Image (cartoon, helix red, strand yellow):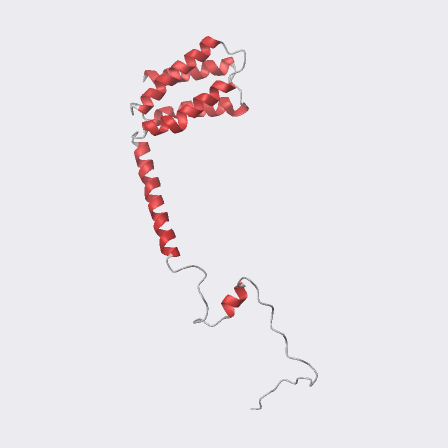
Length: 159
């Protein structure tokens, strides 16, 4: 078999190498020999991130179990009900009577205390949460909506 040698014109120069870049191109990484390629990340990164992900999953599942058993009442009160009640108080329209506002606040306080002391399962709050979502969707709470909320809170607090 005959070897083929490239024909180079005597006056042409060899191609110049590409300019050095401040970063490594993916093509350079993949075209370099196996022993010469330097890893992009330190060796511990996959183990550290994987361990952190496992810890996060365990924490999420543990909190879910505790929440379903009703053992995070104080956390729910602080993180959920306290800001929600403040937002609803701001959404009352001007025609909502102060007595209705006071009744709503008193019923909410009773319900929040039951949640905080873990006397109320979270499943019992589902109808209230659905009603709250419907009521505050337009970012205002009218007198009829206030009456519906008060009635729902009274039903939850009776049980």
